[in-house]
Length: 296
Image 1 (cartoon, rainbow, N blue to C red):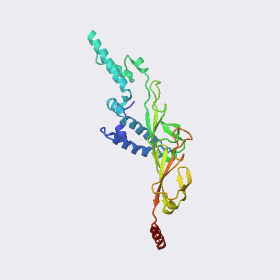
Image 2 (cartoon, helix red, strand yellow; image 1 turned 180 degrees about the horizontal axis):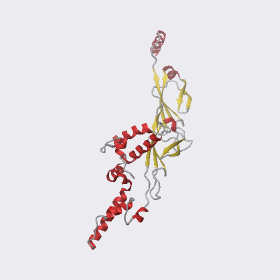
Image 3 (cartoon, rainbow, N blue to C red; image 1 turned 60 degrees about the vertical axis):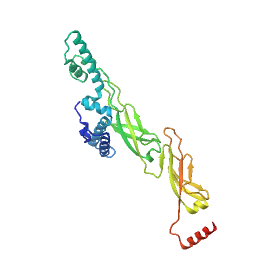
Image 4 (cartoon, one colour; image 1 turned 90 degrees about the horizontal axis):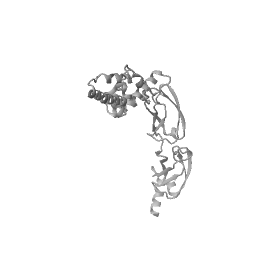
């Protein structure tokens, strides 16, 4: 395997902070995302490369292994164990026969990762689990109001996934076996998809509950009446009680957001009334309000 400079790939220095790495990855991911570059093989390849670089460098443990072991970072633990074992065996040989050869460890390491040496057969049979992949998927809030299927391209493979209704911003789901390929018939890694959900609606979401504010004219708030309001899945008519005060809250049961992985269950919608004081009054209106104030 040839050496890949993940820092150069993301365009960042080796002393970059986690914030620098995240910022660089997001910028490049938006530029090369397959959805924005349909049928562009070069962009698809670049997207996979920067995703791999981010997977390594954004994870402190993986980054440390990469900085120390380069292209063999995924086998860092085996490398360290082999080193400790060889040092232990070498010390024992030195104690008993004085014939310890410092090049033995190099032979052992080479045999583990594809070089020559007398331990080639046993080390080449070692199975290693594939690398886990991380990806981010941006969706609008309306996209997760119902369950929907999406096709993602990972390592030149199309993966058909179902995004459950009610998934939350920042939530991750695991797609088993769709990460990096295992070594020597070891199991594949997993794919973790993190959801970035953009809310461009007039509703504020808190888990399965929704919150919104609607304007109510002064006359309806005083005398009562019917108003039509928007919910997430359509309009409903509400009856406003006479003498409704500013800031009054009403709850519409079951008109909130779907409960994650609980089909048919929904949260509630909470509506706050904002009473609007009339402006640009006519002379007649001022006269009537003056009379009204005298009555009070």
